[in-house]
Image 1 (cartoon, rainbow, N blue to C red):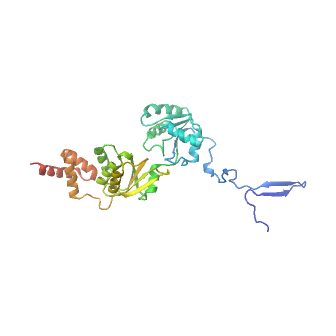
Image 2 (image 1 turned 45 degrees about the vertical axis):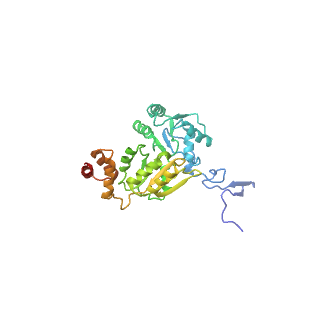
Length: 330
């Protein structure tokens, strides 16, 4: 049976004018882009012929070394300088992917004032600088925004290569609303400042994403339960790794679990649902909070802290604190 058409790559034969047989091969437009494993490399992911000068902000894996884009590897291979938090961490990632790493320079929160100007010298001379963090997308909890801002002011191009991020990965895994969310970063380590800081998010009508150290996780969950109420939450650790875990529960339940179980292993991300419909504190709850605060703080300080935690008017809380203080005075 005659075929209606030829498969891609099929040979066809025709006779030339002198009787010789000529062979041709039909190819689709994307032939020549097949990878060794038989899959095809999309046109958009082919290595660029040339890279424009400037700063390249490159996302790196948050755990699984395979979670890096082809474009990221291409830029890291061809960059003149790679600025990274820890040269050992980035060097290991490059080694896994068979890339040389003799041009790594350290750039992090503690040396940004000195390292930043040196990187600007490279950029002003027309070199390509790739900025990476130890894990995830730069600019999240690192000083990269300063370097990007200086580049913008100097007219140096800034390019962003999207990729892995603990924030978006946690949101996807958590199963909580994602139509509105807010990334909050690390809570302050000391309880007093942490509770005041958390109070600033109490009225935010969105899912909240925090990072926290395993050692402070139980304490932070307990403070969140006091300030936010029994909201649904998820504790995520070791994301994209072999022992990835997502632990669901209300904030108070999770606080009790980690108080008993102790600090978990691995990197921790915490996702907290938005305010509950009946989350407004009762008068009895407000009085209890004020009494506890007045045990160690002045009336003004207690009113200011509870106002920050609840979003209630400071003047009303101040007047109520005065009344409670008067009741306590013999």
